[in-house]
Each structure stands twice: as C-alpha cells, then as structure tokens.
Amino acid sequence: MCARREEGQAAGECSRAHCGSSALADRSGTAAHPPAISLAASQELRTRVAQGGFEALSDAELLALLLGGGSVSRCHAMVNTARTLLARFGGLRGLGGAAVGRLERERGMGPARAAILGGAFELGKRLGERRLERGAVVRSSADVFRHCCHSLAHLKKEVFRVVLLDGKNRVLKDARVSEGSLTTSLVHPREVFVPVIEESAAALILVHNHPSGDPAPSKEDIEITRRLKQVGEILGVRVLDHVIVGDGCYVSLAEEGLL
Image 1 (cartoon, rainbow, N blue to C red):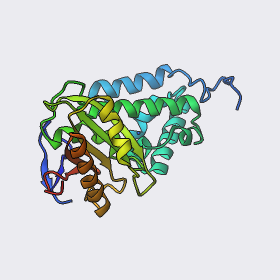
Image 2: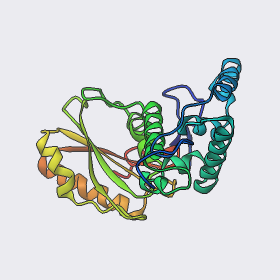
Image 3: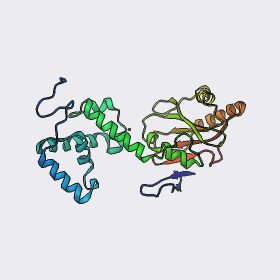
Image 4: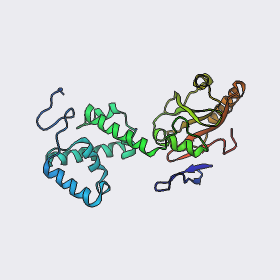
C-alpha cells in the first residue's frame, strides 16, 4: 500500500492509494553584488504584499525578490531571469533540485545568487519536513516519511539512509550510508551496520528514494531488505521497516508484508 499525503491535508493525515567576470561589481549590480531594491519597485511590491500577502506574488516575482531587484527596469530584468529559470528547470521543483554549480552558470546568476536560491530552497525543505530529533519516538512509517520526504523526494540519484533507534524506538541518529547512480542505489551490509554498531542501536529503519517518483519496491529492493534483516538477526539488531520515498508518497515494506 502506498501512502500519499496531499497538499493541504492536516499534519499526520495520509490518504492511501496505489501508486534541493571580475570580482568587482559594476554600478548596475552583478551576481557578486546584487543591487538594492529601488524605492518605486519596493513600494509597489510592499503594497501588493500588504493587500494580499506574499501569496499574491507569482513564483517568478518571489524568485526575483530573492535574487534582488534594483531599479524598476532591473526588477523587470530579474523577473525575466526568474521566468527563464523556471522554464529551463521545469518549475520550482526542478529548480529546487538543481545543483548550485549549475545555477551559477545560468545567465544573470553567479555564485552569490545561486547560493541565495540554494539556501532558500533548503529552508523550504526543512520547513516542510517534520524532522525526528534525537530522542523522538518513531511510531509509524508515516513518521519516517514526514521526517525525510522533502529531502529525498526530488533527488536525481538514489540515496540510502538508516534511522537508528534504541530499545524503545527512540531516534539515536539518521545516517546516510550510500548514494547510487541515476537508477540504482548500491548498498552493502557493512555500510549499513557500521553506524549501527557505533551508536549501539537496538533497531533500525531503512530508507531510500526512487528518483522516478514511483515508490513501488523493485525486486532488488525486496532482496536487499531481506538480506539486511538476516544480518541484523545475527547481530541482534531489529530491522523494523524499509520505507521507500517517491514523489509525495511512500511504500512501507513492513506494511506490505515484504519484510
């Protein structure tokens, strides 16, 4: 069964479905030194925000605010830059998952503006997640999904993580153990159980993403899960679940009876 959380659902609710030049600036402002927002442009934006909130601004306008507009004409240029970025990367999700190095090379960007966007998107991801801090009790696969959904869902490569727990299912650590190719995640039992031993964990939950957005487990996913469970039994460590994260949804192998 795949659990999908739609936008706008209350926290904790999950419906069920199958399923990221020179160093000196010229007077017009460069990527290294974004210019200040002009009084006219600033007032126009303040009025719209005061009347309708930031939600009254388009995606391109919000990005232009982050990138830093100058004069009215410069603000217009930054909105155009923002629109170009959104079109090139396929919207906010694609832009949020783009590497900073690639953003730097886009026209009108540079290291400073790329860093601003990267930082803003990372804050958005952290805000959207309900992270499990050390000592938090894990009660369900939904807890694990909410903990890592935004940081894993839109990655271009598979990333394999383990959430380490004590004897009362309280979080000890969330450890990244491997990163795969565009289509596969290579994980060895040694990589998984080294942090388990270091933290003296009593149990663990396996987590990884499917870049395709479809969390349906593959044959390899099921095989590696059973192999890791066998190793855990030898070491006296319980493998409680394997949560596969897709685009807004997940699959729990424990709930599917595949563990």
